[in-house]
Image 1 (cartoon, rainbow, N blue to C red):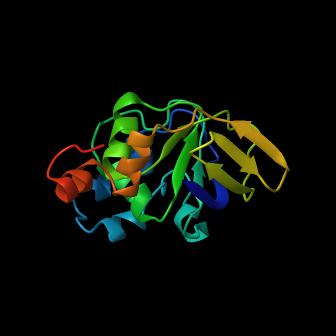
Image 2: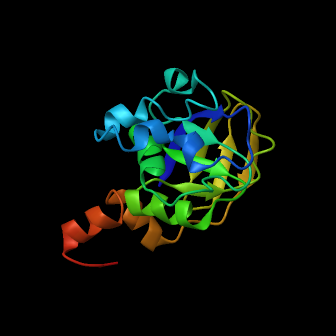
Length: 167
């Protein structure tokens, strides 16, 4: 599985909690995930959504997704057409929710990735290619089980498709 897009970096990289990803003032008012996506990262960077192109990567630091375990945060990211979140580390429940919803969450040292860098993420071989800087970053290859869940759109969609867990 290969993903390509531009890096969209946050001005504050570490300890981005789920209320920063999608503010509490929207979490329960907006039910349409496409509408929810329009407010992604609004409190950290009001221009974030307007800069996105389909397939872009959200690039953060350590402890991304800390805070509540609600699925609205990874859902807002996914419906903003972000292909994956790249971060130094993730809060455990947020990480799991990403895969449950079919959003790749990839742990990598993001220090060398800058706003607008053209990236290619190769989940089979465990490589992120920064085409802008002509550099490669090694990541743990994503197990086929996880790739299957992502390809199916997440755990729930996988269960709907197969009537259970079939990998």
